[in-house]
Image 1 (spheres, chains in turn red, blue):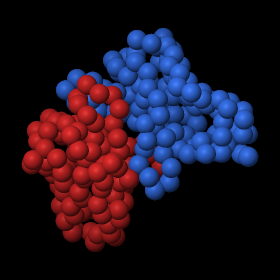
Image 2 (cartoon, rainbow over the protein chains, first blue to last red):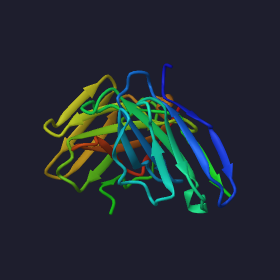
Image 3 (cartoon, rainbow over the protein chains, first blue to last red):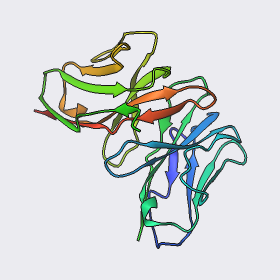
Image 4 (cartoon, one colour):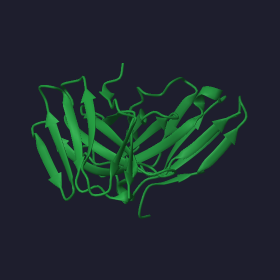
Amino acid sequence: GAGVSQSPRYKVAKRGQDVALRCDPISGHVSLFWYQQALGQGPEFLTYFQNEAQLDKSGLPSDRFFAERPEGSVSTLKIQRTQQEDSAVYLCASSLARGVTEAFFGQGTRLTVV
Amino acid sequence: DQQVKQNSPSLSVQEGRISILNCDYTNSMFDYFLWYKKYPAEGPTFLISISSIKDKNEDGRFTVFLNKSAKHLSLHIVPSQPGDSAVYFCAALYGGATNKLIFGTGTLLAVQP
C-alpha cells in the first residue's frame, strides 16, 4: 500500500480482555516500530523490528505486552489482560532501513479499556 | 526523566507571521533531531530533520536551527499559513542498534487567518 496501515482504528476492550493490534508497513520497509501515545503526551517507544527480528523491546511496559513480525512484514502488538492504564493510541511506524532517519507513521489504533 | 522537552503546550500566531517552536534536550549523544506534524486522528508526518553535526537546515518555509551548546533546537515557519495549524512534535533519534525516536510532548500551533 501507499502508507502504513493500522487496524482496527478504534478498539474498546473490557478490563482483563486480550487485544491484538495489526500493522501493515510500507512494502519493502525493513524497520518497524511500535509507539504508545497517552493523552496529552508524545509517542513513547515500545519495540523495534528489523525484518522479523525483534532487536529492541525495552519500551514494553510489562510482560502483558507482546509483539511479533513473523515474516518480516505485517506486525501484531498483543496486550493480554488489558488494564485501564493501557488506554492510549498505539502507533506503528516503518522506515526503509535502520540507517534511514525518517519513519512513516500509521494513523494509529485508539485503545480504550473500560 | 524527560530527555526531550517542549515547554510551550500551545502557540498562536497570525497568518503570514513567523512561528517559532522550541525544543530542549538533555542527552548529548543524540544523532539526529526531527520535527513531526500531527493533525487530529492522523499519525505524525515527518516535516524536517537536522543532523547533530549541523546547525541549520532549511526546506521551503521550514527551517530548523540547532544550538548544541545550549542543547536547544527550534523550528521556524515563515510565512505561517492556516493549514500549518497542528501539533508539532520534536523528536531525537537515539541511534545504536535501534534508531528509536524520543519525542517531546508536543506544541499545538494555531495560525489565525
